[in-house]
Image 1 (cartoon, rainbow, N blue to C red):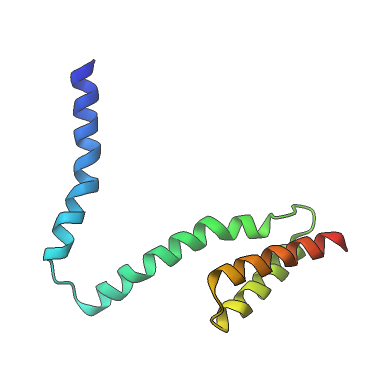
Image 2: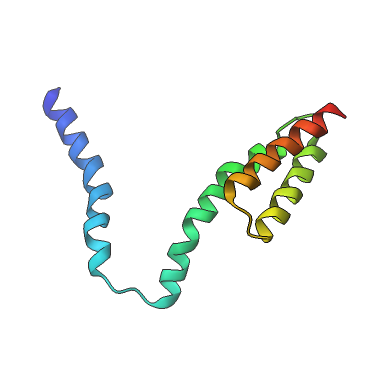
Amino acid sequence: MITMIIGMAIVTAVPRFLPAFVVDKWEFPDWVDRWLQAIPYAALGALIFPGILTVIPDQPWIGWTVLLVGSLLAFFKLNVIVVVGLSIVTVYVLTLL
């Protein structure tokens, strides 16, 4: 049983640690670098976007409005804490209406 757990840990750890040591030594084409830089934004969007649409399940317009407000604030390059804070305040104010 212990050997199986150790084996599973090794099999799980190798694919996670190996790229961290190998990727720095490889030279990727520019388009691959641009593509890799977009991955965190895509992952974050995939994690957050469904929550925006279901912030209040019976009132999806609140989520769309807050998405618009947050996008506008981000467009003007405000600090991310300000964007998140004002988006939360917008949700709170809209739920009071």
